[in-house]
Length: 399
Image (cartoon, rainbow, N blue to C red; front, side, top):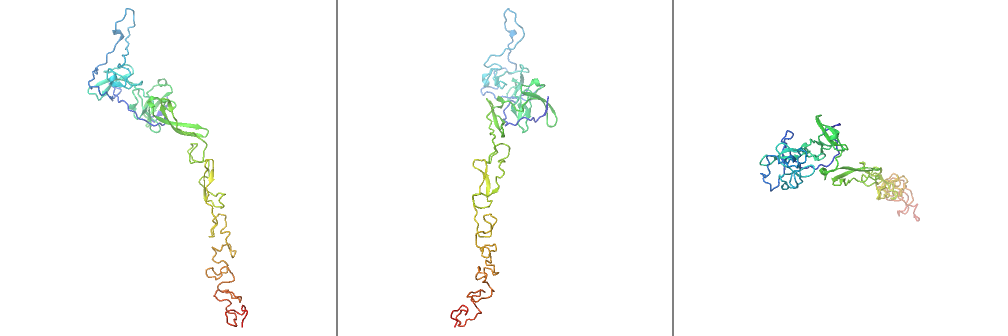
């Protein structure tokens, strides 16, 4: 037998906690009583004799023909409906007034004192005005969802925890042959090392779908050459059904994990980086790589072309500043940002002719009709014989 921890490594399922009978045996094996929901019409003093066992008909008590017959005592099955072990839906369908759960559905039971037929235990009924004992079926709840050991029936089942804390009932066992097909008899050890005996557990690590698990979900997978996607499936009358795991496909550029590897759009390395479109007539990476409409590639989303401005900045990202704009002195600075366009040493703000390198404050005056020194007087200092304000060099009639 294998040795495992109490927290048994079964696959995680959603747990639906189910109501179970709280049982008390009149023998030494149980200390809790039965909680049964009695029929409203049933009086607490039931007409059935609750203080003694039901009458049992033995074949030896019945007149026999002269021919020789076996004299072994055989307990005969009580007639249905209403008799012991007959199917029922309500307590008033039973001669005893008690309809209880069994492994094969609800059945009529009978009262007892300290003994019951094989497969049954005599347990006290809690909540009755008189002390009443009933023959209760030993429920086999192998693989039923659970939260406590007492929810696992009368066959010594423990509530075994999976890795995420969900519980499934085991069943006490002593050897492989005592477990159903598909189950193994494994020794159970608590987290602190205490030996808790052996339990039947599914060899596959997953409980088979049965009525005990109807409505319960578990993990399922959809696997192909692209990857493995995980989803959930439900236990129904058709078995584990309706797995909702997505089908893995080749990774697309769409913001989704198409191949279920836990990474999104990993095949598209440029995604989200800056880019420059060849169609916007600039060289600036002021766009961003984004997914194409069909998800097969990335495209540069640069739809904001930048044109060059005269501002001392390379607006169109061609590594040249203010190209195409006037640069009067050819000093590499466009006039719009050059504070001395004619490069004569006199800033444009004080230069009376900022684009004429021969005219500036402090320049030597030349008799040519021009104000070279920017004092507001042309040809000042040169002879003006007729005092007409025009220097003789420029006056056609100097007398």
